[in-house]
Length: 159
Length: 272
Image 1 (cartoon, chains in turn orange, cyan):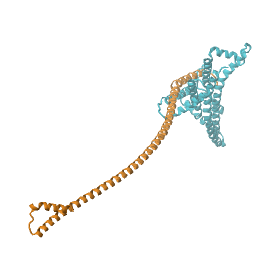
Image 2 (tube, rainbow over the protein chains, first blue to last red):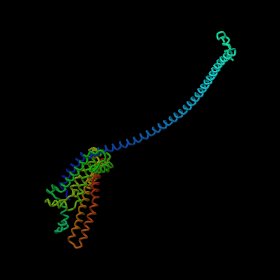
Image 3 (cartoon, rainbow over the protein chains, first blue to last red):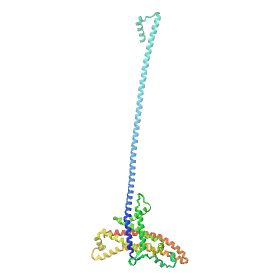
Image 4 (cartoon, each protein chain N blue to C red):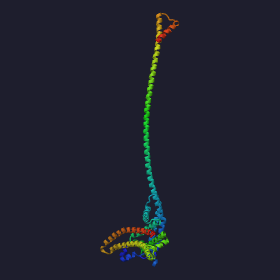
C-alpha cells in the first residue's frame, strides 16, 4: 500500500470520465427528465381541466333539459287548451248550422205546402167549373164567362 | 488456484502473491499496471453505458438501460439536491462519476478470487490485482480531485481574500496570536477530508479482498487434511455469505464516496 505515480494516472482517468459525464450524460438526462416531468404535469393539469369542463357541460346540459321539459309542458297545456277551444267552436258552429238547416227545411216544407194547396185549389176550381157547366148542360162560353170564371177560381183559391 | 496452493505454496505466499501489483517503473515513478488498466477499462465501460443511455430519445416511459441509468441519475440527483442548494449541475455530474465508477471498481472484488490472476498468468503476467479501489493510489487520486474542488468551491464562494482570511481568522478569531492555531486547525480539517475519504474506501475494499483470500485458504486446507471436507463446505458457505454481504459494502462505500464530497463542498461554501 504505497503511494506512487499510479495515482497521477488515476487522476487523469477520473478527470476524463468526469468530463465525459458532465458534458454528455448529466445535461442530457436533466433536460429530458425535466421535459418529461413538465409534460406529465401538463397532462395532469389538462386531465383536471377536462374533468372540470365535463362537469360544467353536464350542469349546463341538465339546465337545458329542465328548461326544455318545462317548455314542452307549456306547449302541451297550450295545445290542450286550444283543442278544447276548437272543439267548443266546432260544436257551436254545428249547432247553428243544424238550426239553420232545420229552419230552411221548415220554410221549404211550408212553401211546398202552400204551393200544393194552390195547385189543389186551381184544380178544384177547374173541377167546379166543369161540374157547373155539366150541371147547366151547356157549354160555358169561356170567352163570355171568363170574367165570372176567373172570379170564381180566385175565390176558391183564396178561400 | 486451489491447485497452485496444493503445489506447495504456503498461505503466506498465497496472500502476498495476491497483494502484489503488476507494476512497471521504480521508486516513486512506479505504475501499477493492473490498477490503471482495470480502472481505465471500467471508466470506459461506464462512459459508454452512460452516454449510450443518455443518447436514447424516449418520448414517454423510459425502458431498459435508459430506465436503469435514469434511476441511478435520479438517486444521485436527489442526494445532491438534499445536500447542496446552489446550482448543482456539476456536482450531480461529480456524484454520478464517483458513484458509477466506484461501484464498478468495487464490484471487481466479487469476481472469483483467482480468475483475473489466472488469466493474467496465462498471458504472461506474474501478478494481477483486479480491485483498483483496494489500491490506495486509486482512492487517493479521487480524493485529491475532491480536495481541489473543495478549495475551488470555497474560493468561488468567498473570493481569494475571504478564503485566506478564513485560514487565519477561523475558527478562534482574528487576533494575531490566534493565527497559528487557526492555520493549524484549518490544515488538519482540510487534510482530514481527503485522507478519511480515501482511507475509508481503501480500507473497506482491502479488508474485503483479504477476507476473500482467507476464505479461499480455508478451502485449500481441504487437500491437506483428512477431515477437510468440512473446510471445503466451510469455504463455500462463508464465501457465498461474504460475497452477498460484500455486495452491500460495494454499494454502501460507493454511496459514501459520492455523498461525502458533496457534503464537504457544501460545507466549504459556508461562511464562518
